[in-house]
Image 1: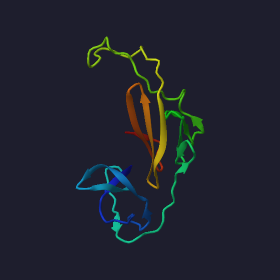
Image 2: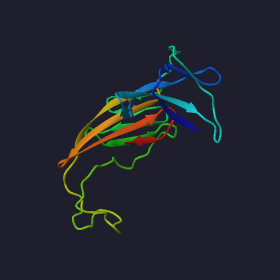
Image 3: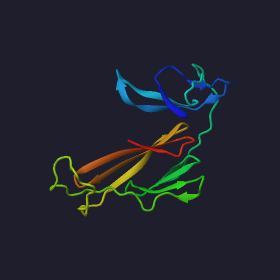
Image 4: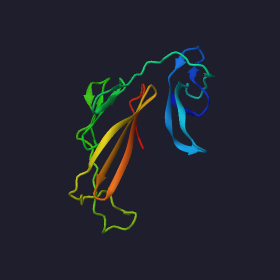
Length: 178
């Protein structure tokens, strides 16, 4: 499996057990304590039910290739390519290994009228009363590898604002959404 670890140390580079450099990236941490707002993110291959040995060094190591490619409206990692529309919605996800589009239609942020339901919408299988308002928004690349690439979208619909971070990792076909 691949694991992504966060380190807040002095570490400037990692090597695996064979002495090969591992990609390391400084990222904005999801939490802060005492003014520390950045962490180091490293991708490590760990066997199932096993362990691996890595070494941290305080000296600058060899440069590691960045596997990500960027265009004006997309990010890709060699396995998937995610494209965004002007309003911040995902308009395409292409599986680059299969060479095929994975979305049947672009994603769509919407507001639904649920006034007639209780607070938790018990026993409601789907909402059908979509309000006619369209989401307006934008996107920007906030992280550019070599471990992770992230696009932040900010959209407004009605009086609501939705901010989402879409992240893809090197050598992964998954998309994390926060």
